[in-house]
Image 1 (tube, helix red, strand yellow):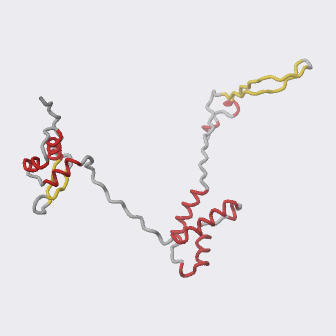
Image 2: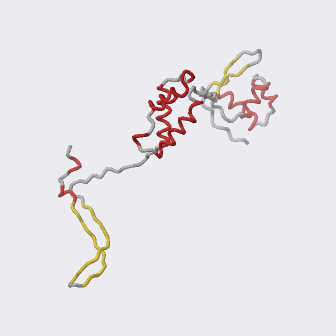
Length: 195
């Protein structure tokens, strides 16, 4: 004897299906679940399921095979921008700037002006587009992802340092190890909390 499957949740998602005659009608998740149940657990053929449920044969076949019921969103096509033909030249200028002194590097305005000088009327792009591209490219090239941890000393904290040193004791010089414990909070009382 078969064990009954858990009851399907009703009215979760409605899917649009073309019925006979070209009209669109909705199939609930319960109906889809029932179609899958008849095929997988009762072992009925697609034609039998089609006759029993009243759905078109193609609809029954579609939902027996289908695993993912998420609606797929169409991929947005990216079009080339007006700046595309000039990007290789801008990239070259910015890469050459890596070896230059930081005051001599190209600014976005300088890049825009040079492109205007070189191409004249052929270059009909706004300076805002050039600024946006140059900013993104500089971020990529000069990627300075250095992290810093703030040094905060709360009252009562101390700093310990360990190391090696040369000691002279009773006129005899020898190497040894040392540890230094420094009370930081006495130097500047609560310096991190002064505003």
